[in-house]
Image (tube, rainbow, N blue to C red; front, side, top):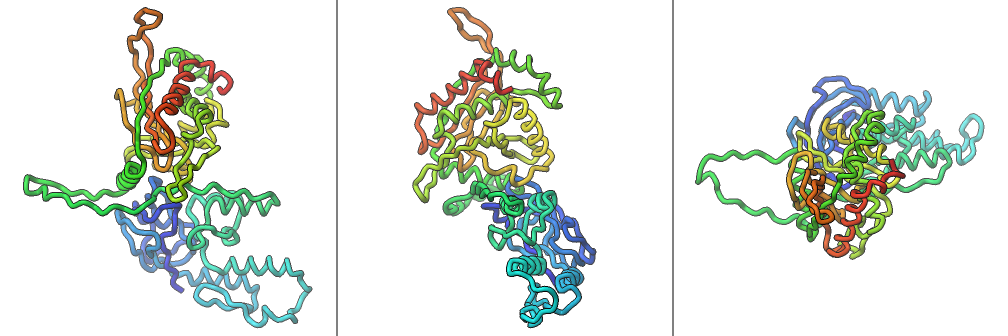
Length: 444
């Protein structure tokens, strides 16, 4: 029979994807989990595998298209695939028949006079669940979730999906694995939404062609997603920016003293790891900066975990991957994570779950230059810290003019959640730690 594969729900708040590549041709025989398409969505490039084996009848999309979730992308003749599954489920007897991709038990299955040893109710229930799962059709899950299931040796058909249309998430797989092992299931942290509120009506532009030559280029791919997120953040969050600076002369000496520790791990020890650690320590002292504002419930959501978003400039545009549990990691471990996640982002290998769950974001512009900035908050977080170029600057210390290595810092914050005085103290807390390297002695 023909199986119409639709673009699945790829994550919270994701409604569409851009087709970057079509990896199969019409008439081609494919295997289950073989890559069908490469798509970009929510700033991540992912491959979408086929949930069934069979022959490609028709490819309905092409490279460069932007398609909404639910679009039929490819039609596959999966007759042999279903036949194999049906034969396996019935063990050589016609105990069920396939109707539109689902199984319907025959009278033989429900008869109390079945031959063979009598099974207990739990055993019958387990076997029935396995048969139903095996014949219910392909499991809906992202490539990353499928990979996780393979690593844990879990059949996705047995995992209940909590997402729209039965989509299976990473959290569903982890919960199933924990239950299977007899452990208490831990509900996953829901992904932070990326869209809220009604979209304003677009404003018509004047006809620029009346004044000279123009060219129109569609906004697609990463730039399109960035434009949507920035407009959302600016429209919904009242931004205020506070600036300060830190004398990191001693920190630079401290960094050089311990850079061999990072080299042993094959990475470079930069100021970013220290700023990230200092920011988390400050967030613990000022929890109102580690929150989100729930407009519908009119509540402040306090988060007692510390996942830091790190803005990474790539050839495709700006990406903000997430370093998890920064409060529990050493400076060297952070240096390793920062290097790893930045390389994945630049190579377009970042996964969706690595872009979600941030509670606070840092953008380091220092490598490029600049003396000040007014960064836009990564919705729905409470603040974002911009780190500018560190440079030798003349300062007055003890009545004498000296040279110091100064690092400008600019914090944009949501004025609904906190006020200027608290933010000033928060930034000063970061400055004090950066100016006193002994703060990091215990967390190297």
